[in-house]
Image 1 (cartoon, rainbow, N blue to C red):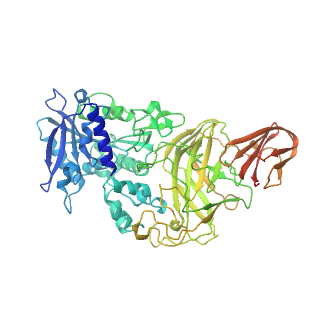
Image 2: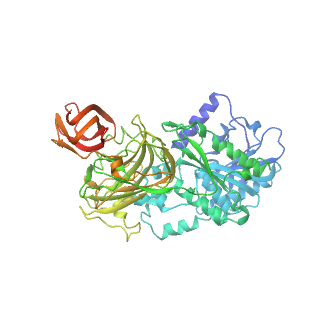
Image 3: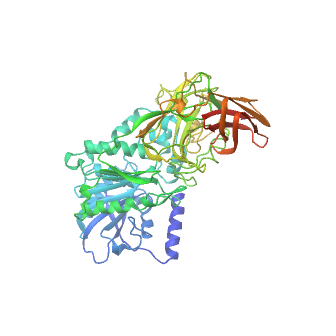
Length: 636
């Protein structure tokens, strides 16, 4: 299993360098008499002091190779004692497993109070850790141990929700698969409740308890993490619902970070996917230490005057602050999808335009970057142009090169008008930032399962009527990105994103036969259509700050018209303008890559297409008289 591999690699590296920390090994008795294994790290010369507790399901022995918060092997430089505890049933605490264990938060309570009774503890105890190690901090705080002073959960929230596993009805295949590999044993429960039901409702009600967080909480998250939705729902709820004495003490930090867990990218690293954010490196550790110093060491370091929210505005790569979450300022602007692949603020004028593609479940569009978890899959911002956009099972909509910075801050909502020739299918959306060099860097993605268009209960789900036009609305995770001048905004629409999400078989059969995460039984190839016309318009709601849209189509398209023949063309294509123009003709492929350009003078020109591959292209005329564009198909 993956955790054993990671353990072997880390320990082998440490042993090869002859450097390991040597903790005091002890055990902590729980409410039922069972004991949890604990490693205790006390800096030399510290007789007693504040303690940071970490509760882990990933083997406490790993911390002998390196302590968190930038301490590494240099324990004696730390102002804190660390206590690392294996969860009940995991590794050193495997013998504590019972059929009906106490709540994890109750185990956390006993850990905190045991620490407070030790001679080396001064009674001030904070908690630390990411992901599962962050979730258990909330669970511990819910039980309100008297000596718990503060918590600092990273890329984590306490919720266990239907949407976490079945966003818009499609199972997160790689996510549940990875949780299985890590030993959490959630598959039976998740796969046994494939639709929203009383079980999910009960669990969600139990796991949302902002009023129970009675200590200061510093939440740390990342724009490429999969927990954004739950984190950004829980933080403002804590601020408004936790006890009045602590409401003003909660803080939130959102950086340009992935969830982490494997590869070089993690919360606080400069390298994130294929991009680098040098001025975000280490912010999480630095601010966490200021937080701990204020509450655990009573340092007058100004933390109490720090912004409630600090967040990273990608693109311009700056840190911003806000007095509350969410920040104010964004105004929704509609960007419409057009039949020629354009994305702009103007409603389509065509009454019949649409784009269609084939989706084959046996050849799904691959997952490449984004908020993924499974080992072997890359996380964060990755260029989609070759792996995803160079396929035939996609509709791509791209804005013109931006004449100004466009600041997006919030949830992008995609409204699609769609149909399929099969009784069920998916529509998957990716939003990207297209660089001047052609890179299409992933920002966000989301699926939409058509049988769940009316909701997620068993009564809500039903097959679709082939050929009937439906609404599909996808709300993407919150993000902060500035699309820089010269960049373009792109929306990719496919019908799969695998293995991030389960492959739809395009039939009306059971979605997960035999509770399998990914089984194809009698899959069908679907022809799926995106409508892009004035009657059935597909568009994106973009939450933009300070954006002024052009007030007329003439501002970007003042040439009176363009005719192309033959269309589809083969070796030669003739372009006729309705008026004389002097400028340049550019040809782009469906991904937005410039294929060729040539001068134009007068009202006609000929395009040599003999070297072009079969496909859909966009001809753009840029001249002193204005700009106009039209789609052309090449078929040799």
